[in-house]
Length: 379
Picture 1 (cartoon, rainbow, N blue to C red):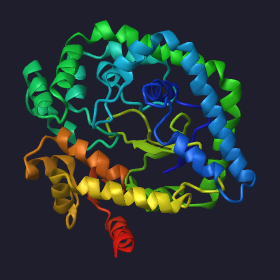
Picture 2 (cartoon, helix red, strand yellow):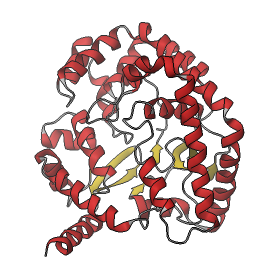
Picture 3 (cartoon, one colour):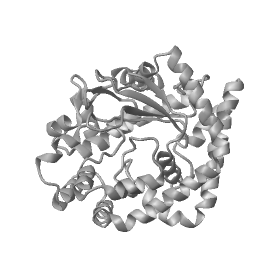
Picture 4 (tube, rainbow, N blue to C red):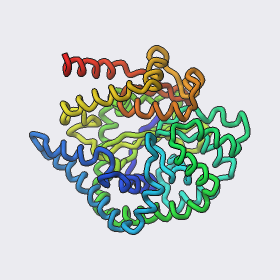
């Protein structure tokens, strides 16, 4: 197994993120302004911090250029790229039915790919749609029965979305070709913004490539990702791993995995450009008191939801994959994914890949740490 480090951006991913952030209340990706403020307050701003702040400035300029170039398209952008409440799914995702396995895709090749899908393929991908980036094995049962509009409607009925959102998704799925043109046009306009600003961001991507090439020589980078983020996707297979720069979502880490039937020879990790020598993957030390308080509040809020608490209880002693939990709890895999997304984002659940399945388990160290923090705050 080799670790490959990306030396250019994934245009499709960055276009999507640029359009998504324009629908946020402050017009920036989640956590962007707070992270920049935390860095600016750092008591001893050295050369490394200044370099990181420069990256914030670069992304800020890209987003502002996007707002200017797409000002007349904001109504369409809000329609297609606003997340449905409580999910990581927007209408554009339903229209495109696309998972980013190849980092060489552009808006043009994306459109060709989507148009080439058969109705059966589109239906299968729709049934397997997850409400977060961590897919379990929903697809293993797809072939057990024919894909019909009735089944798709049943899938939506059991999802946690609001009725009006379910209807929008269902009607748009049926007439997806009418919506494909506007969505791809928005992606192409966002791509023009990225290409126009390339002189700004290319040096940052070059730094990313140089930095991670060096880290892979001197560290167990995948082991560090596993330890810090509780995401362990290594298995016995020999597929390579690709570390690719995530520019607009600059303080995030995400991943996609391929199965053995796909031609892409690697598993894909997107790593934000905010990571560097000063913080190496983990920004938790910055403004740790506020972060600790936020973690306690999020923890209490999550556990006030009985379904999330039941999921944690189900996996506290025995790890399980999505379909297992679905059967045990009599919930759809989409509903399991919806709840699991929030638990993962707050580090309460660990993830491990075993062959082509993703297993979930309680991150007991994180739970204990938050409980100690609550005790210190209140007792």
